[in-house]
Length: 138
Image 1 (cartoon, rainbow, N blue to C red):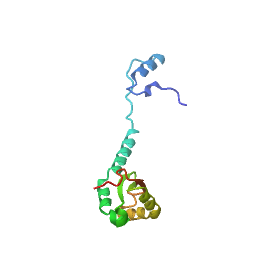
Image 2 (image 1 turned 180 degrees about the vertical axis):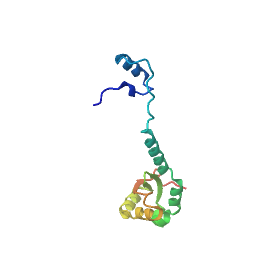
Image 3 (image 1 turned 45 degrees about the horizontal axis):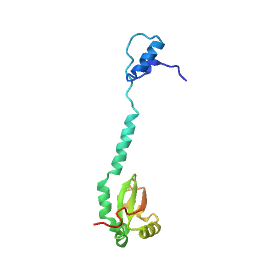
Image 4 (image 1 turned 90 degrees about the vertical axis):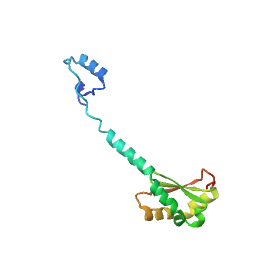
């Protein structure tokens, strides 16, 4: 472990600097300005990319318009595309019977059609859930 160096402390840590100055009998001078926190930049970039992936109304609008083609007209009456959550399309089924039927019957076919049509980088999975609106849609 490297020796303690009080001069590397940040400017914001003024009280700790004063204690270190007294303990190590340093000259009366200001602590050096700290380096900018570079670890924050990648975190902000990743957060913005996550928000961008979640907020893709253009892609979801295209999916909603092509929904009967993607899943079939009979199934489209009982299931609807919900949200795109980190690359996974959440599909809402009208009730548990349709949820079971669609999730067992599809087995990756919908995902392949979505990837073929809209790009493999946008859709990584399909999750099936019961419709929170209970099938009451306009």
